[in-house]
Length: 167
Image (cartoon, rainbow, N blue to C red; front, top):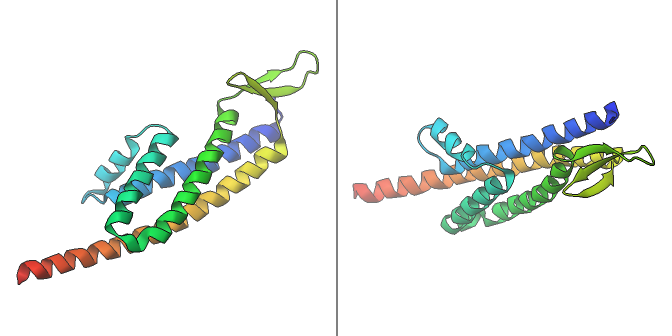
């Protein structure tokens, strides 16, 4: 049986990671920028799995960078955060999808994931939970700033087009 502290740490880690996944969906929707928010968000949620959502966001960011090169430094920072999130996702999967088993000889609890057994390390799990929570906040800020600038650049482009059309 896992200790309450291990359960709590895995729960904190999971919730923090879910924040990152939520922010990915939100910023996919923001980049898509359909006139109806619900359509953008629905489209963002259509991808199942963290890897697919991350890949979709990276592809969208690549397209945004081509259209708006001024955003490249911000997009590069977001990409670094996404890469770290993907690394953390591997650890998250080990804990969330791992099976808690008792070692017959030592009676120690270990997690088994994809045929590999590892001991539960409460300090590691708490560290991952803290890092993931911090990364979620950083990622949200990075994307929020980038999207605000993207909206501004899109508005300028539309205004230029409207002016050209009126001439």
